[in-house]
Amino acid sequence: MNIGIVTVKDNNYHPNQRLIEAAAQQGHRATLIHPYRVWPCLEGGKPYLIDHHKMQHSNVVLPRQGATVGDSSLNLIRQFSLMGIPVVNDFDAIRLARNKFLTLMSLAAVHIPIPDSVFVNSSEGFHNALERLGGFPVVVKQVSSRKGQGVILVDTQQKVLSMIRDYLIKRDGLLIQHFIQPAGRRDMRVLIVGGKVLGAVELKPRKGDFRANFHLSGASRSINISPELQDIALRSADAVGLEIAGVDIILDQNRRFNVIEVNYSPGFRGFEAATGIDVAGGIINYVAGTYG
Ligand SMILES: Nc1ncnc2c1ncn2[C@@H]1O[C@H](COP(=O)(O)OP(=O)(O)O)[C@@H](O)[C@H]1O
Ligand SMILES: [Mg+2]
Image (cartoon, protein in one colour):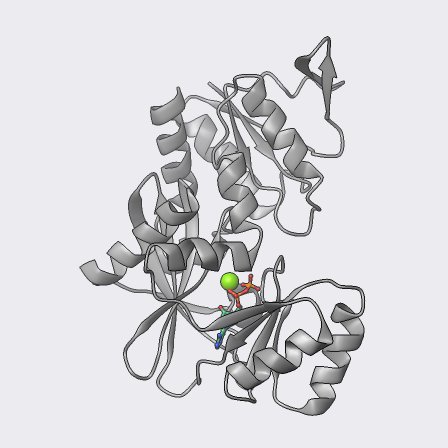
């Protein structure tokens, strides 16, 4: 079958390269679809694509455009569905997963443990959130950040002022969250494909940082996770509606799990290296088996 991958990156980018390889190994073909070179079109009320490179002949589409690409790419994802082409993960799930606060709401609705969090879009809101969360320190996040880039520890009034200046004056919303102390804490990433746990890694922050993203630390090791943690990860993916998901979970010093976020297009270079698991093969196998 033809598998389309929505991405702005080329075929040297690790996940793209691995998915193309895995598709070929399983007798399929994966093609990269650049979201700025294919345009959804409604003609006589019918959905088409203006697609000079003929990338649309996909039997299934994997949206992996990431957070750096604006929400405009979501229109293309919806268009594929309207054209009857299955999309994995689908539009509704991606819309939730691209916004960290919408994700937390979905998790909380099904009683999945999350850190106390407030969403604000004014400086007044920021001060109220600080008070509600018991004062400094707090974690502040842009709702659509990734790779740790928009996640900041705020522990002084000075930093509050710069947050207000940089984000809240423009009314870009911010997520203010209870800070889980690094002492005695464990950061985990669980990879889910098609309602199954593919594997899990533990990530360690670099010295002096509290963020344990693979891109920032590089220190990851394969772990076996308990049935309880597997259940939390599976329910988290399910709560957002994701078939393919990277679930970030922190075990705090009181041994309580906190789900931090759920990624819809998880990278897996570090994950494959740490675990030896063929993630690309697992994704292709699931997608071809389910939608082929
Ligand atoms: N509330 C928190 N307390 C302590 N550390 C956190 C908290 N939220 C996030 N982190 C750390 O920061 C990292 C990045 O945060 P995350 O919400 O996953 O955003 P991103 O999309 O940038 O990965 C997490 O993997 C975790 O190590
Ligand atoms: Mg994360």
